[in-house]
Image (tube, rainbow, N blue to C red; front, side, top):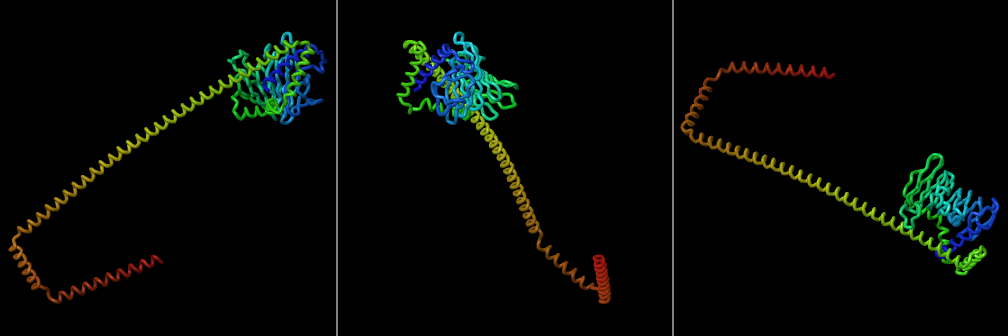
Length: 418
């Protein structure tokens, strides 16, 4: 299917160039290109488009939901219009002899994918796409833009700086009155909003790339659909051959043109695949290197934490040892004190016992006899009874006075409380 499509596109390119050279059209009906592939319902103001239909200047091409089309311009540029899109070819000037010219297209809404042709090869600044928020200046490249409400996103697809075909590196200048941003790295994108300068160039994410691819999904499905019958393909080939014959081309020339176009398409596809494979490899290498770095960093952090913990545990063990030593010293000191005290008490007890033993029993007996005698003498020297009575009376008076004083104090306290 892909080979057939490449053949069809090559034949259409040749038809378009010959038609442009031979057919003299008015300014109102200036030929711009031919519909190469179509899916769903795609219309202009006056007609519904089909594969092989001619596209004229200032025609508005409208693709509905789940629809899309690919237009092959006379300078071999390719405009792929996605679903829910509206595109107009405002300016198309092309001289096949010198490849000089100018292309200006405007996207009112939806998505447009551009692969530049001969005009951009001769002069990279000759292809521009106008969007509501500004302009997109193509410089010999492949890019895609999505116009939504108040915002336009532009993606540069390629080719890269060191492509295998030796093609000029692609670039897109995204700009408006407030500023501009140059996209010169494949799969970088920039956004524009109303009343603001374009945003900086950024690498596209997977989710964003899915959005761009979704817009072209309907057309891709139409190209690769296996339901198309071989009879229809043969009819398409016959029609294209008849048209080429009517233009004055011979069979050998037609075959050589087709082969050349097929080879070019193959080379482009191979180059794109190689670039994508190289990018994937580079991304994988970077990811692996980053993972290794992260692992090393984590290992270092873990080692540092372990070292800190070990140091802390060592410090803790040293402190514990010091505390244990202090406790041991204190226990030893207390034991020594206790032993000293015990020794001292033992010595005192032994001394007392010795002193008690030394005192003779006779001295004790003599002392007891003396005490008994003294008591007897005291008993004999007792005072008369009169003196005792006086003393008792004095004591009673003193007791009464004390009781009276206590009562007075208690009364004073009660008064104060009241």
